[in-house]
Image 1 (cartoon, rainbow, N blue to C red):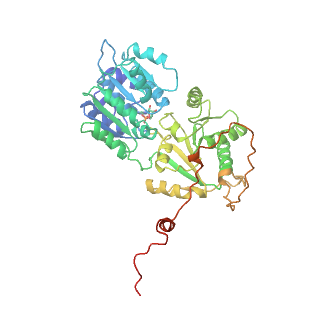
Image 2: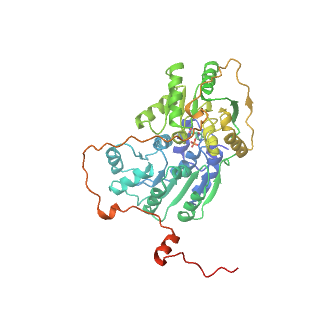
Length: 443
Ligand code: AMP
């Protein structure tokens, strides 16, 4: 199957040629005719399947020039990084069209975005909160929206965008086409569809849980954090094919710690992105990694979802994620769009249960690699790895509060009362003089 077999126009085909894409991916050729028919569509696809082009190609194929430049297509995505990425993809696809695209997201000054949308645009790519702000300020009108795309819906819900999504949906014209893309279809996603969608068609890329076939998965059993760091350093030093490596760490703290150590051992090769980093810093790190300036990018799950970086050679699961689906999302960062990739997981004995759950989900046992002979096994444990010592509770006498002569007033009379528990028996004795019995006991 080649793109020329889809009902695309010359502008889009030329742009695809420039991008070097010849064959549509599964989700792209499955979704194209259904979206073109005007139906609502629910696409089950994770990043790496080509889902962005799956909605952009038919969306742009159906785009019609209009003079007033109220946006016709609205694309909601969960993160600022995705806004930037989807905009870039649209810009490339519309090289031979006069489509104006604006991307808006929160966390930065709204004024420049207001000016941009007020100037008129055809496609808006937005995070939900900022979109609502722009509508409320009167900068953006949604009356001409013909097509709505909600991308990575599951992630939107994870990030707590529920209310904002509903609010946006209420603002849109009733007659429109709805397209939804999600890696997993949860009960919440289904509710959203039943409430707002009109008998959607389902299109599936690769069901979640199936190991992506073009990913070579490997596993190392490693005792602790510091040995994991040693192993990563060793692999990076010895394996020159590791040119674009994404490392996933469970928490921001661990990601930072890892970065500090790597910076000392392999200076200027890595950057770290997580939600505590300033937006500019995040963009810069991603850019440096994308451009090949950094060999390594350390990331937490939330930020990394949806960032598309071509040709990631290796994904390292520095730890085993608690949520089994995260593993699939993580490894999906390599081996994208029909390229082969390598995924390496480091599992400590404490992570055995999570690992088992992931293997069960994939119905696949990740081949275990022997630890390299010259790997330095560290005995040093992190705070989290220290065995918990249960100490007996010791009561410590509180220091006496010395009257500092500060503001003081007598308690009110009613507040002086001390609660005294009076049992039912005592109450009865006070009332009746003696315990009340229920008649004489029978002998
Ligand atoms: P996505 O799943 O939309 O995040 O896309 C994953 C990556 O695959 C992106 O870098 C796309 O540019 C790339 N891609 C999308 N469609 C194709 C295609 N038909 N052929 C080759 N690469 C593609």
